Image 1 (cartoon, rainbow, N blue to C red):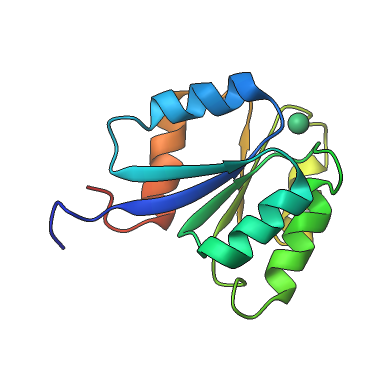
Image 2: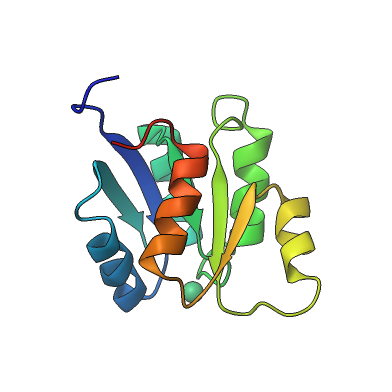
Amino acid sequence: MTDQVSHVILYIEDNPQNLRLVRKMLSNAQINMLSAMDGLEGLKMAQREKPNLILLDINLPVMDGIEVAGHLKNDESLAHIPVIALTANAMYGDRERYLEAGCDDYLAKPISRRELLNMLAKYLTPLG
Ligand code: MN
């Protein structure tokens, strides 16, 4: 692969501050970050853009992240896309609930840049 590789990720998140933070964390990575601020908009954007990876907040308006993950994994054109749940309400059993819903992995907020990049490197190869 060349250094022209650019991954497209979709971050579905209703908190503009988190969107800004993650966008900033990714600013030096070769990543084009799309965003959507509710679950349904995010699902539609995923269908339209076919991103390489999806970061998914769980508490979302219109359609929550659990439902979004279910729709993504039931759509054969989208099921291969890694979905990383990214949420603050990490109570006991939540991680299992997200994985059961179809998420491939999970990051607890507040996330660090290193954690985020490590997670992306695990699912996006190679990350320039
Ligand atoms: Mn939220």
